[in-house]
Amino acid sequence: MERVDCIVIGAGVVGLAISRALAMAGREVVLLEAVNAVGTVTSSRNSEVIHAGMHYEPGSLKAKLCVEGNTKMRAFAASHGVGVQMVGKIIIAANDTELATVRHLYETGLANGVKGLAMISGADVKAMEPEVICIGALYSPNTGIVDSHGLMLAIEGEAENHGTSIALETPVLGGCATEAGVVVQVGGANPTEILAKLVVISAGHGACALGKAFGLPNVPTPYLCKGNYFSLLGKAPFQKLVYPVPESASLGVHYTLDMSGRGRFGPDAEWIDTPDYNVDPGRAQMFYDAIARYWPAIRDRVLEPAYSGIRPKIHPPGKGRPDFMIVGPKEHGVNGIIGLFGIESPGLTSSLAIGDHVAAMAAAL
Image (cartoon, rainbow, N blue to C red; front, side, top):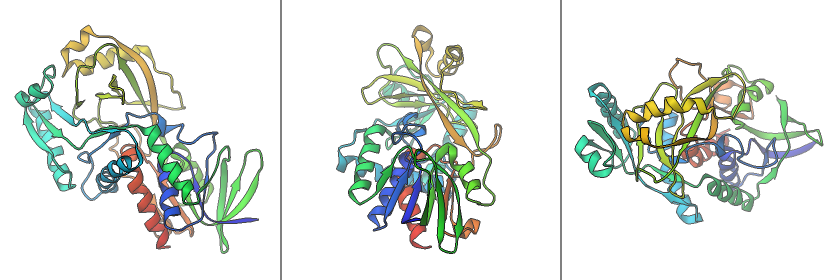
């Protein structure tokens, strides 16, 4: 049986970042990916936003790793030639109730150590974005957008430069912890078993099933929450990202830009039972209604279905969003395995910080 030091399962942006961090710490790393390319599922289907960290409970992993990840990603992008635009974000309030919610986000952001936040008036918003209608907003200058494809290529390259081996089309079926290490059962064209000192499960939508297949206790139940995006035809109306107050399952239908300056809206929150990435054109009416609350001129513009992503949720509809679940032997009692579950937003922003967090956990084992 082949023996290796570390196996990371899943080559999305988080799995790549974990592999990079472990390799830079001097570990031998093999990254296993079930499909034929890295970063083709959740990591390639998002809004590419670098979040600042005001949406997450103080003291939570999401708060800590988002704020750290924001700083780490901007520095990494600058040193590796990855495209980033720190365009800033406004979270707008349409009424007094929403203004109280926005003020709570401001206070949460301050508690989380987010820099540059400011409560601004409706007049201030109009000076920034003349077409936005609101009574007040939270302004976050440390929110931006990133070229997620370029980011993943740069992380992959650095991981490989430090010795990481990446095996594509190599699905992991399961395994078990033994006194000698963790036995990993690999499928695909050449089924085999590998013995590893450390296994990190960072498999996105497949993480919960793999956690159970490796015998971890208390693995959460996975749920699928689809986020649809619609492209805006014609001239981009805003220079900054424009967000409504957050919803229970998402941050609301917001406006963002791609790296070429084209505008789009989304994602919404559509709970589904089986993976389906088609965007239903009929959902456009809901988008028009949601957007018109802060930008009435949307009624005169054209939205076209763009793309969708699916959030790897670990909570059902109607329940509050839980924290990232990153657990090792200290939490689940199974030697040699670290599991990551429910790594949804702000997973992209947090990816480099998650990598360092997991590497620190691994060093303590």
